Length: 505
Ligand code: NAP
Image (cartoon, rainbow, N blue to C red; front, side):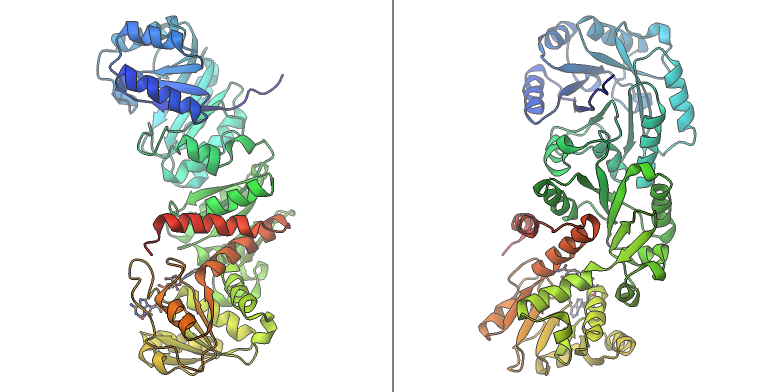
């Protein structure tokens, strides 16, 4: 028996018939193969519903969700069930019936037996699935609110354990992986909205994102999994960059956003859940604010790049073939290589160079550690002097107040403050570039051409942009995980395209 392919279902709540017909055509054009008609949002008389269902050349699910299950239908239960029987008679491929409706009241067609919890991931999820399996319905549907992305993994447990075709979804931003990866785990289907704002439940990606961003058509049962852990994570460019790279290289992988609330315990709960399920094929994770320190603690210093340990932050997690974890920091590597490549030198040739680093936060820490590691003489300039002093002391550098940066005496200047970043694009951390400066590296990438870069170019310096650093760290992650050369140009173009949508300059 061949496994039926996972349906890409577009739920439609469009109230009137003409707009609904237009939306159905748009959904099919955007790649949906099944349409769900949400009668509880529609004003569709029985004869129009019959005509519509009979006239459509695609599979149809008809749903009329009552308030008690998070829907919009407020009429009598008899009227609600009558509308579903009507839809079944008109030829709907499936009707969705809630689990508390007795089987003798189910319409005579293929029934999707559904149950929802909009508050949490229930402890008795397996009992729900057991009841559904024991019922005469053709398809099981379980949907619940995800507390963290580990709850998305529960949906895959359920899909794998059920004998009937099963749709299991973890709602909300934290559960979005359950929707994107449904096809890998052989789910009956997943829901994707026609456009942003037209979701029928929280966390639904759009059809366009499913097809173009999350590689829907390329997903297979052995597709390798990657993702970015952060909070917030919704605006991360990483899914676009890595999925475009997988696409360009025909690499069998997909990369998803994983929102994990701050706190070590939340981070550890997801990591533990992944490690308990080797069949997930999870290969790599990017880690961003606020979890880089948690990643180092979870993996343990012995399994991390020594410089990542010194910096105190891991931004790249690799699941190795023997089941162990490895932690790296491609932020420092990406920044160091951006600088060295532009200067045409090796990392080792940084030895003895004088470097002024502006700022004493997270980015500065990675750069100070890397520059010192390769033997450069570093001075840290910061608005809050004690912070600069503490950082300088830790890595054997000098410290100075930010207002002395105008008279700095270094060959290389690296800006690790947000001064000049969108929307404050007219700001600049130093008034004039001192004549001793040969290279200026601004870690800001929005905008690409900051005031600092502008001044440096006018002063005849070599310049390095934050874009190179940003692309480099993603390229390094790709190469660590896949052991293949990354399609750098494709990845850089994705960043440029995303920036062109947000840059004001
Ligand atoms: P962070 O930890 O918050 O540190 C910010 C630093 O900038 C602090 O030292 C802070 O000084 C200083 N600062 C902030 N506003 C200032 C102001 N108005 N005047 C003077 N100093 C100011 O931030 P981060 O994570 O290090 O990021 C810093 C910048 O690096 C970001 O804005 C981003 O542009 C860039 N970055 C780029 C990449 C990339 O891939 N290209 C990656 C990461 C970061 P105090 O100590 O006095 O508060």
